[in-house]
Length: 332
Image (cartoon, rainbow, N blue to C red):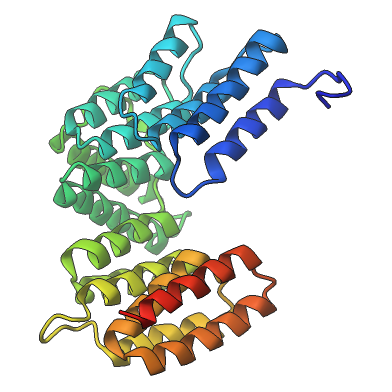
């Protein structure tokens, strides 16, 4: 389109910048510069000004770089141009402060978000819980999830035709609002803008990954998996990846609940459950087997995974990369 001098709409520029942000597992300075160059080309050469979506993509790009101050510089430029922040801007900023371990920043951004009149839904609450864990406040995040699940269970158990439904819902929403207030998230918003939250896959995945990575609390993970099933939410590859990570990190411990028998059960679900094979999930699975079962079993598992991956039409570059990683694991 550029060669043919065809006018490129802003949405296409945004997609191009977004592809830079999503194409790399870890952004290098070169990748970051590529995204910023596209932004410059879009505005200075094509004459297409950035909008809120552009800045959200740039913010996400910067937040995943090794330049912790760059996201705030992009936000400052956005405000200088009087480009209004949308809900995605606030969610990005909440997540950024979580990565920075800044609980105060999380809370101040949330209070600013409330002032916009936007609805507080499960997407926003998921961002808050993720950010709180990143900021070293897992208990505060757990408390929010507990009240979300309790509230949604009560909603499901109460017939919509019941005259007491609205009264009970209002009471339960007040309770959730009180919990948010107690965690420092302010109380300056109307209850009508707190959408009745129903936890989704992300809500549970946040805590499954946290416990698999940090606490090794297998019992808590089983409880979360049970809740996931109770809500009728189908598991995804990301959930199994977190479990494989847990076996890798905690399988060596004495008296660990992260046993080979349980690893085999998760693997059977992975290989037979129709889950899409991904590079990271396969790598964590193989690491776990090399640690818990040794080279021979791990090699057999790799052959099964590779066959399924190829059948799914997996990326040859990813499969080759895992093959190279497996060779290094064998030599350890």
